[in-house]
Image (cartoon, rainbow, N blue to C red; front, top):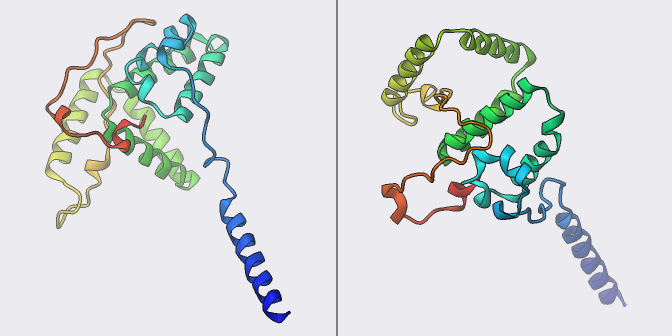
Length: 198
């Protein structure tokens, strides 16, 4: 009897522990498959045009987020619509590594104290108000510092390498479909799951 009770206790503990471990957080629950690019409506394709070549490779959660934006798009002001379009275009120009770095920077920035966030916001406003020539000069300086400073090297903080300067704006008209990206020399290397995330 004691042996059966011991086995029952062990089994119930095991079930309790494994069922606790199986509880998924909302972020861990898989997002159902979203429509492929060819299945989107004309309206959705027009709004999401800057993401057209990346769409089918995006994970479902990101596709769902962008589809949510298409539902709200026509209720936005003209300035908000332009801002969303420019952000999509800029995001589409980033490499997978730059996108990963941008996500990491976003997460880091969200963890900053309010005072630091306000300081960053002010610096961004100052930068945004600069003439294009000055912005380009600063981008070049940042690129030069990033080239000289590599993470993991002695005496290098790597801070300059973690900055992403805003992409140059080669803005496409709303609804235009940009040409496919040129094949790179990396084409022979197999892609990893991290490379394909958007």
